[in-house]
Amino acid sequence: MSPAVSLVLFFSSCVLLAAVFWPRWGVASRVSRYRKLEERVLLEDTLKHLYNCEYAGTPASEESLAGALATPRSVALRLLVRLEKLGFVRMEDLQPTLTREGRKYALRVLRSHRLWERYLADRTGIDPADWHDEADRLEHRTSREEMEDLAARLGHPLYDPHGDPIPTAAGVVPPPSGRPLASLEEGEIGKVTHVEDEPPELFRELVSAGIGPGTRIRLLNYSRDSVQFEADGHERTLSPAVASRITVEPMVESPDPVRDSLADLRAGESGRVIGLAPALQGPQRRRLLDLGVVEGTGIEAEFASASGDPVAYRIRGALIALRRSEAENVRIQRFGPGSPNTPLQPVDEPTGAVS
Image (cartoon, rainbow, N blue to C red; front, top):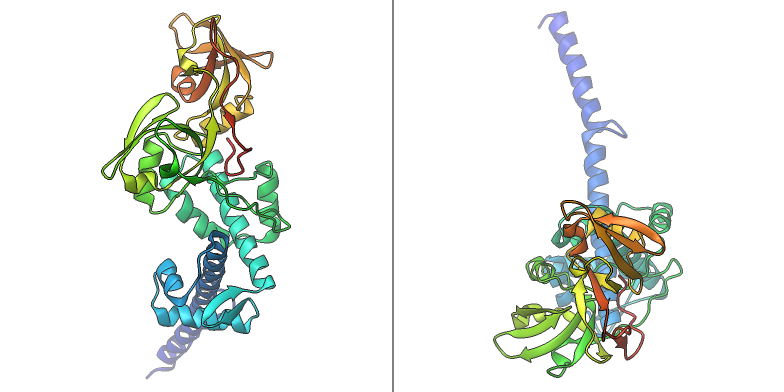
């Protein structure tokens, strides 16, 4: 072999070895970092599962963890043993429970997840059925400093878009509240405080039906085959499987309140905002909130443009212009001759949702 060929082979080997073993950018280093991240994700998801079981009052086990992570039981057991050695989990009669440090860690991960879901709902146009998976991806890559910066940018929200409470920076979480939709009597009214976001296909049906935290529901009929109810003045029918994902707080009703969308107001008519449609998400929802279109605010239709769209509305002393497609997503209680000015009032102050 000639010296030139040997030299070429030598330098080629050096380049190849550098590409594989370079401390920071080499293939081996990248694979190692990926594996460490993958392991940390599994450990953090384990802590999150144990906390969710604790919060719901249901026992956690190897089987429940394997199901939640879609992994074999052997992997679930390995994760629990690892967390026990780290001091985050305690095994009592083969049942895993969180230690104080484990619970603090789980709450940090949960806080990151729910803040990201709030961000995705309010600031992006991502499909609501994808909020959970995208937040799952982001929660493990967010430092504490980045998480608190995100919370500040969002205005320190209390609940995620499904009605789940967001743990505070100090790890405080309100207790669960509300009851299943099926527990309402026919004709009884409740306010939605929480909707389950898993599985995604059932959550997508709820979004399509306009059901989300803050929606007022009057149960009409609950049978083995279907659930019929009135949601903010519109009749809906869902399967029992989908309806079972809804949690409500019972409410008392003032005499015959009138509910419409803002688009139903004519010039000179007024009403009070009772909420935004759950289907309205992302920048459009954020724009209305920034304009002051929030629950309890009075609003009056002033005049329409020559084409009838958009319409000028007076809110908090200012005029804003909204197109019909936007106004249809604003739910109001109309004021007028004979219309009561008092909307539905909760039996107890709900703790499961904010608009």
